[in-house]
Amino acid sequence: MKSAGTVGIAVMVSRVLGLVRDQVFTACFGVGLLTDAFYMAFRIPNLLRDLFAEGALSTAFVTVFARKRAQEGDEAAWRLSRLTMTLQCLLLGALVLLGVWFAPAIVGWMAHGYTQPGKMELTVVLTRILFPFILFVGMAALSMGVLNSYGHFGLPASASSFFNLGSIVVGVGLALILDPSFGETAIVCMAIGSLCGGILQWLVQVPALWKLGYRYRPAWNLSDPGLRDIGRLMGPALIGASAVQINVVINSVFASKFDGAVTMLAVAFRLVQLPIGLFGVAISTASLPGMAVAATLDNKESLRQRIEHALRLNAALCIPAACGLAILGVPLIGVLFQRGKFDSDSTLATARILIAFSIGLIAYASSKILVSAFYAMNRTAIPMCVSLGSIIVTFTLNWLLVKYTTFGAAGLALTTSTVSIFSSGILLANLACLVGAPSPGTWKAIGKIVVASAIMSGLVFLSLWIHTELGVGFLFWGNLSRVVVGVGLGALSYAGMTRWLKLEEVAELERALLRKLKPAARS
Figure: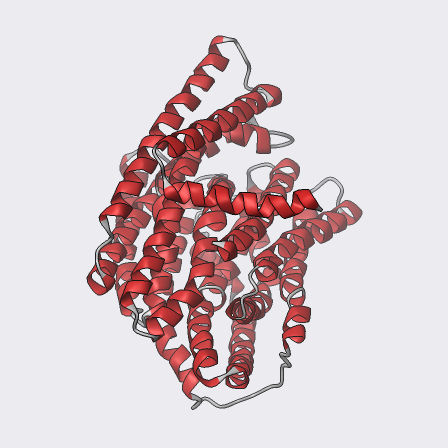
């Protein structure tokens, strides 16, 4: 709980800075050619980051590193980290060179719907600038894995804050110097800023590793047992992660057909990522080392309890968050983004996408915890098969929704939510067969969460209706009033209902928060 709270706070800061970065983008560039080119260009190396750095490799490395340290000691674990870092740098370095060389072909395949003059060419230029990002983020991910295994969660989780900070400061600074009108040169400056942010994300973790006693020296031994264990875990995981990235590619291909869709999908998912990162990723990151140890000791009861506790805590936070995002979507996006070149039509279109994403928020966040549990048990084949099956579902639903409905980009977001629900349900069913079904107490707790969230939603709807009846407009101050009143009323009503229903997870959160606040008050 303490570790998850530390990670959650760090992730929240990172997500807020990411939100600021998107606000800067949309205010300066609007929704159209320049932002679509940037988000598509950034998506390509970002896919590889999820595949080779922060996804399959990171989770497999943490699992084996924690086990190696518990069984053989620190020196063996350090040696494994050096071997992994060397191999990763060589592989990702080669991947960067190939990506830069073949950028025109990659962009032409992923963004074939970009028919505006100059849009495809600009995307290729930005892709070549951003491709080295994967190398530095890969090193940052391994550094994060080492620090997490030693119980250090705050700094690694906040490293992405430095990425966002570097992106904003360097990118905007260069743009103001070279292209204050924020045209094509300015968007190139933002790409350079993002690359600098990726480098900073790795560098800020180096002093903490040095303090632990880590000294990197190139090492090479492909027959090392620990390295082979990582490879065995990564094999099925890479296939599963590849399937997830194929889904992203499918969404990107369909989104390129709609002008501004790539940008609006990125902006809407940024808001959904806040609770996913704050709750799902934070709880998953903090739980993985403990789950790996419980699995190593073959303590199924302890493992089951850890998984259940993580899922209940996640549900207590993500279900009301999803309701709030869906209900307050229009005023929230209006407050955050409706300025400069981002107009009211963009707000309404993005809000529809946000509602569609919110439907799958709890499933998406829960899948982070479920996949970590399978990794801890060395059962990576199951997530792999689920991910492969999701490819068929993603393509079929996207094709049907684009061809036979007028949902547009919102249909793509709805597909993402549907696939998340489908995947997490199958993962949960398989996990129940391995460690036991969730206890009745877990289902009872989720029922209480749903009831409290439903009552909260009704009250937030009522506050929006009152604003409309009073003639409050939909400009900045009217939207801000809707958000402040809605969030405040929702938080108070949810806290009150969960206290009345005696929901232990929320009480646990309150106790943790009070423990954090008491030392601060004394100081």
